[in-house]
Length: 202
Image (cartoon, rainbow, N blue to C red; front, side, top):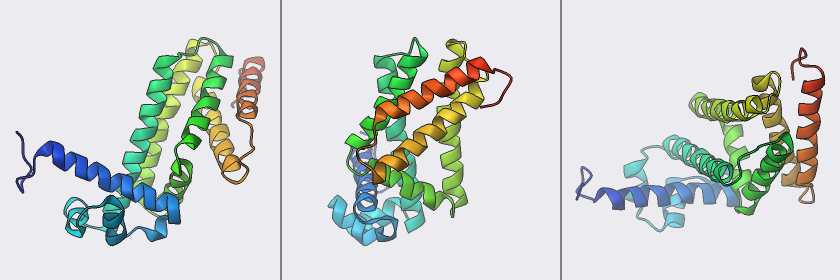
C-alpha cells in the first residue's frame, strides 16, 4: 500500500485532507471566512490540531485549498447534470442553468461559501487566479453548448449567462423566494436578443 512520507497510507491521508477541507467550508458557511483558524477547523473536522498544520502550513493555504475543493465540487455537479440531460435547445439549456442554481442551494451553505471566497479573491491574487481559471472553463463549456445551438457570439453570450447566474445567486441569498424560472426566462431572452442582433456583443 502506498504511504505518505510520515507512513500514513495514501488513501487515509487523502480522506483526512478532504475532511479538513470540508470542515473549512463548514466553518465559512456557519460563521464566515474570518472564523477560519487551524484550531477551529481541526475541531470541526474531528482531527488533531497537528493534522491541519501538517497538510496546510498557513491559514491562507487552508483557504486556498478549500476554494479549489469547493470549485471542484461545482464542476462535478455541472458534469453530472450535463451528462444526465444534455441540452438540445436553448430552453433546455436555460432550464439546466436554473436547476444548477437550485441544486447549489440544496447543499447547506454552499453558495454563502462561494461568495465569501469570491470576496476573499478580491484581496488574494492567488485565489483570484483560481477563480478566473474556473470561470474560463465554465464559460468555454457554455460557449460550446451555445455554438452547437447556433447561437451567435457564443463566448460573449456565455459570459453574459454566467453574470445572470451570479446575479440570481446573490438575489436568492437574501430573497429565498427568488424564482429560478425567472433566471431561465432571462437566459432565453438574452439568447433571443443575441439571435436578433448577432453583430451586437452580449
